[in-house]
Image (cartoon, rainbow, N blue to C red; front, side, top):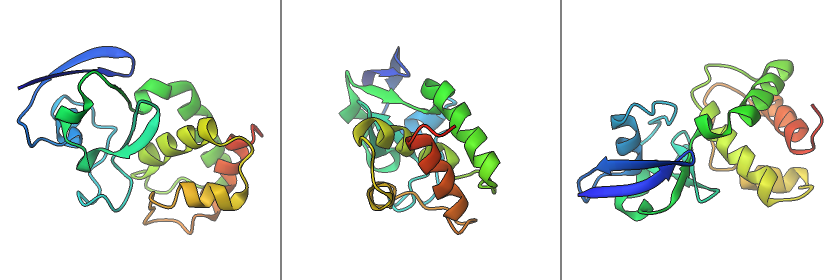
Length: 150
């Protein structure tokens, strides 16, 4: 079956099976920035934005995105550059596997919550796991990004 949606604000058409998840569809079309971390909706590595809100692409059927807008890190490259620089400044980059999903969640957080508290930031990002870090350096970079302290 054919599914039409917008990928990073461009029309996109994919031929899929009814039980294909968005993660598979994107990766089958060489969108490899969306990571397959756990395939169980537990880690956040596969996060994309669906109409501006973070969702886990490993548990979202592709047929459910018909006519909707999907954003990956390629669609927010300016913000990804800023966040990447902040991660580097804070020494928060480790292996980088979680970074794309985390970047999309942080981007959505910044747009959704105005002047969030530290606790609100932590609660919003609770589904994005990093197996390499203790989160402190990442958190410092995220706070700087959200509060426009570049």
